[in-house]
Image 1 (cartoon, rainbow, N blue to C red):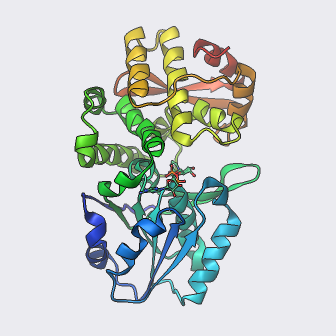
Image 2: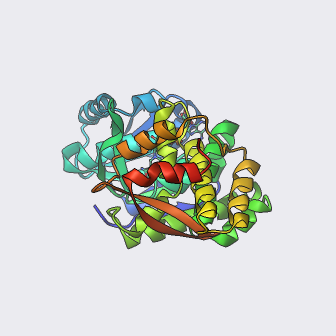
Length: 342
Ligand code: NAD
């Protein structure tokens, strides 16, 4: 399950997905999972390319459907279609479809081959790469899951054209994150506004960055934590909002908080902090929250990634470089205060 995925990034790739899939897999049937927004846009275009039997499940769009009952529905459809371990499951959609379908593929018959075709910016630069799959429980997000690598990831930037602006901006938070943690040149290009015209290259840089951190550390214990830049306080904002603040907006606020705290503590310069905040705003992302320090601290401490009474905060040192700070849970309110949270 820790194998490395083959990743293709190319404008127009969806239109010839079947031939690329045929180079990697030889299934006797294929089952595609998509959601109620993406399916009317792209499902038929994909399905009609195959000559072998293809079935599908269309799940309702939305994070509230990222739960076990949805996965069970997929299992029933897979059985009804006669899928075996030699066949192929394709996830066609955003991060929700990718996480659910990945989990279904990891667990159905103890593992069926998986191809991810991500259709949101967030899914293209983040969730489709790295092998994390799973669903939410009423108690919290992503509490059940498995590490399961897709053998193939097909990324077609053209499908992003149908995304609502706010969903596109949400994905930009993760793009900006890669600039902050590892790719100062990407950060520069983002500042110059060169991304929309060069989406293929931008996505490619992000995917390479994610692959780099994941391959160093597939099981999320060490360096991979750098990818969580902005996520500790971002998740706290998301949780405090009852998940009405989307993931990317949460991460943007989280990056802003930790950048201000880093500047305050002399870990980065005021200039570095100002650059990060300005870039977030340039792409329509929030940098402030009304949630108070106590609420955010409680939510951060409740996060599943907390180990042995300490949290790992990813703190910027300069553009393109962050470090891991191990912080006792009791110190979290002080970090939030330094991050401008009252
Ligand atoms: P999403 O899958 O809910 O997609 C957002 C909305 O956009 C949905 O309504 C969807 O139907 C719609 N949509 C998708 N593609 C479209 C297109 N091309 N045109 C028009 N509409 C389209 O959300 P998301 O932001 O893609 O992903 C968020 C999820 O990803 C969360 O559940 C989060 O936990 C998960 N995630 C997972 C990882 C990982 O490593 N596995 C990493 C980050 C986030």
